[in-house]
Image (cartoon, rainbow, N blue to C red):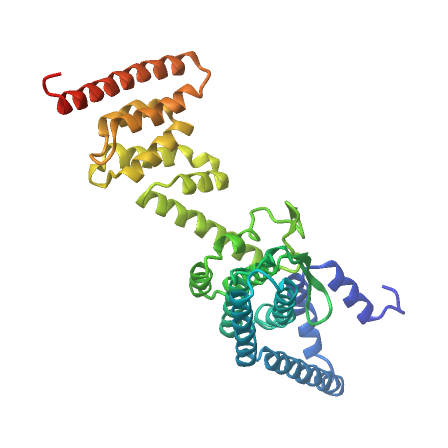
Length: 383
């Protein structure tokens, strides 16, 4: 050990090379006991310094919370959006420059608010309910701006946002549509709350009520790596500790299971594709659920489910298609179903599928011919 080494230099080096949680755990195990064993004079000097740090941290936190000012922002943003909506209603076909300026002013106020919300709710883990309330306001306001009726497309306006922690480390930096940045902050609050063993249900309820779930979960992907880009989007999760990474995986798993439960209640082509995109190995299970709903749960058989089953079987289980003709719902036309099934078979280049399609086509034409003749006989009984 070099005699001229300084503890501060070593601590700086370790903190820069280790995740925060690892660094803190190492200090708790190795340094804290040593500090407690120092002489009374040395301990007193360290305690005075730590008390000063504690006071400054508390003062900084109080200052951050004061910056939230929910009531002030709520009135300001609502007043501005109402003015914008009124202006667009009266001058929807002109004054685009004025409307763009009004949009920019609203966007900038939200933009300047987001870093404070992240520092308080995520970095400090304080006032999470208040931060959640603020994010609801931000999201609602920006959605209203996008739907204000102006010729100006707000979604085409990019806002440069940088969010740093309280010691200056950049945790998020992007130049994009403002709702994407808001979605990132929502993700952060959701993951942070979950990592602290708080129920995510309240946050998720607000996200779903705002119909914002897809946007938020776009920032939650399995196998995240630091600031990985996906179609131009950075995840910006380098600052996450192990608890937050575990929380993110938990949230993804819960969403996956929730989708399966919803599919089990009522099949959906959208859900089918989403679930398979997350886990292709579950295809057989989803097909079994579809077969059960079509061929076993007859009381649940309705036209919308039936069309969905045709689409799902057409994609991944064409051998099940003929059996669907035997369980046709009363509110569906046989010809309609035959046309759907025919289209799936005809699009295939396999000889067996083409032969089935031809056979089905003949059957459909015979049925159509019979219907026409029946209508003629009804219209002209003596024809």
